[in-house]
Length: 147
Image (cartoon, rainbow, N blue to C red; front, side, top):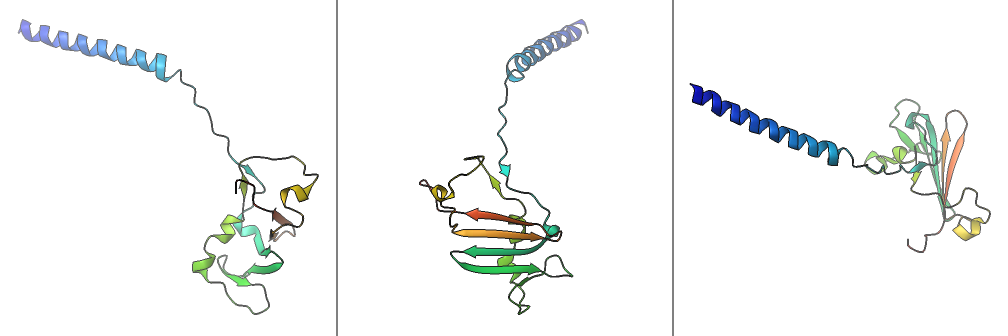
């Protein structure tokens, strides 16, 4: 009986020492590591998709516009007077894409020469009209040298 108590005491002592060693390692090495937070891309704007009334895309002079139906929030039509419904398989997440475009970096706070960035005239303009009367637009210029 005394032998069983001695063996249990040795095993308990070894496990306690092991727990202290592992705990010390975690405290001194793992908890001291600083994690660098990746900065989130900046929003151009951020709106809810229910607030969008109309989306207009002008690319190299040609414009195509889409308008949301009055009943179903997922029902969109070509805004050409024909009441032609868009193909939802192709339309998919387009309204979600225009709710909040982001940029990984800011080139300039204020662009004095839009020609230098290919923004005058822009190749593409995406205009988003909201139910409250506001219109948001993103001007897309030439590709950068690194595409």
